[in-house]
Amino acid sequence: MAAELGTSPILLGLAICAGGIGLSLPNDSGFWVVNKFGRLSMVETLKVWSLGGFIAGLTALGAVYLLSLMQGFLPGL
Image (cartoon, rainbow, N blue to C red):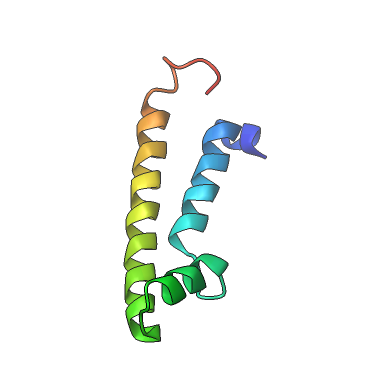
């Protein structure tokens, strides 16, 4: 399917992983680790977890975009 789109399968996989980072839900075990060890309330943890995931997702998306611009120069992409 990636070949039909004319996209690198590696970049496609990285983009999918970037989306998974940015859209993490409170049923993730990391959420509860931050909640318990940070001694935060549920509302505070939701704010911190959502903001952190959003920033990490955007950063990963930007990295995938930069890699896609270098697709002709980097071997394997």
